[in-house]
Length: 105
Image (cartoon, rainbow, N blue to C red):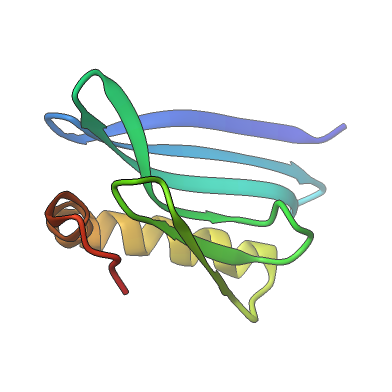
């Protein structure tokens, strides 16, 4: 039987990281790590690392909700680790760029 980990970390007022992953015998089957910022009363995605298209990738969003997909040539385990590290290290920079309205990256 596999294991599911699902949690939210508040990084700052109006800034949070959502983490979700499923494993079976230590192998990551699915993951998503997402930085979200509250704009008005809504939580908007800013950066998301996931494997929803059967490959690891990063999606970057602008204020209008447009996204840019960046393929990652990484295992699900490595992409999950990278996503966690990148959001923890760079959330403040991502927040500034996002709220300025520009596409970051």
